[in-house]
View (cartoon, rainbow, N blue to C red):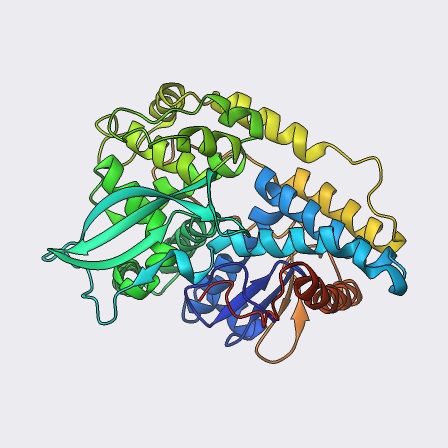
Length: 432
């Protein structure tokens, strides 16, 4: 299977085409033991990382738009006669392009081989620039810009990473991992909990300073650099909250977005491009810089975030999340032409509306959701057992059906790419 949603590890993965979570090195029993504080925390951390991706796909406006694209492609493949499969090409190619836009192809980013790691004694410097996507005809598209983050160690370049939707997904998943360690440490035996918490916390935070992982950690660095918050743990929490706002903005909210004084206006038509393309990474960068000088080292509270939203031309939190809730509760006139696909999509919409929630913007740290009464994803563990920790959204048969849809999509996609793009794509350039 291809990797579309970003992952900083090989211990688990979430497939947005089938909505299945795989824990490749954790068994169900180990996960349950970790959630009771009786075993190593890593299995629980990975679970929360992947569940965060799953929830973001179901319960944010960004995720709803992605699922609309996914189900439109599947419906086109399932409902189009085999002798007219070219009629399915537009929907199939739209999903293909959407998948690639989550992290961008490798052309747009780099990490210098053997680049030095960041540390407290030798921190990287950062600068910002903008770039534009290249259109299929080879010309740059000024109305499809993105924000570059450039990392340097002294005069030596370390990496250049675009602030993508994938980067926002990963800052939220990393923050969820880190949030797992605190309750886990509190359940450890007396005298062990604090030390175990500090050791595991240090190991997790160390990932943020790995040059090879800047594709995934870039949003945390932006949150720290822009706000001036020195603690990377706090910066992850801030990044989590700002990304949550960005993922719940509707397209109308971007019409008046304007960078604060600390974040220069992009050249030419690019500001208009950021607005028209509803660029969520740019929204996070603008908000982070609008918080500079406004918040304490413990992070901003709700009133400070409200002030930042107003400064950059975005709606209030109540307006953003009210509009998002309305959007998530909106049911399309027809779920899908294919009956079973329509039934699954209906359940997804109901689950997304139920899971949608506004974060506590006054809380210094995020908290994970351990309520097993909530609808939950299907998980496959290292011993090939499939389970859900709460009421399952989809069962094994549903997931097998989605996998068949995915395989049908891939078959049509190969033909569509040959016809429309003139390439044989081997599904290798989504992330790497």
